[in-house]
Image (cartoon, rainbow, N blue to C red):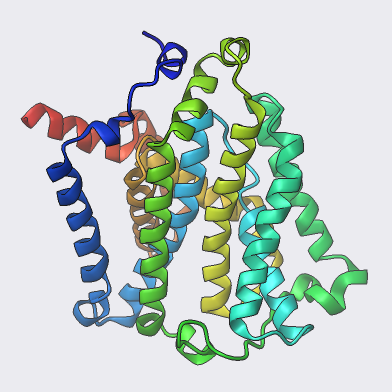
Length: 336
């Protein structure tokens, strides 16, 4: 029975059909891992390695957003950088020019980036996968050009970027604390866990079933009476919201926004990380981001960063078409 036929049934979702004991154990493991993760700075005392791990999980958040959209809708967002750089610039503008306190500036930056995703998504989600990818890339390039306009230099800092003056505190962390890896870690870790839960819950809901069925046979879904545009739009907005969290975290940690955040290369890092880890699960993009971040550090020390990165990515994708996580899950199933 195909995905569309499955949608016409009223059978409970797989998650709901799971035994209650198994669900409670899964919740226990998730909460336990979340709590234990808060103590990582006590174990990993090296500021450099902790900072590297923070870079990995922030990249992982962006990769989770990309992976959700690709796996559920079959849409690849080339313009990921639009939703990494936009919240960063909005945070700086709200803090520097409107003198908003840090919580209000961060909330409005995230809201503004999500609203931009809703407005642009209403146009781009109707396109086929390849035009969709190119349209999102055009959005990112448009924002980058706007950020470097001479007329907007007093607002955005132009090519020099925007140094932020963050006032107040966010969850008890002021600007000085946010710049330190050990104190910034809990915020980044909790954000990662929340994002992974949101993506997992959405994928395992009826909403996720509609998205996958639409991807499998959109014409039949429309014939069956399902709206195929609104679910894709909501998925795009959710994906952009998740990516925007990564961009906001970058800005909070560095207190700086530059045009490079809106460049294709910035979004390309997250896209490659998702492909390396695999987008079929919420853990795959995170694993790919950690591997990619570690590889960038290791290859950078050799002086052949681009060459070795390109070779490693090609080998990984060729050897593991379903990503590193897909390979690990296949091994796990074979051992059962």
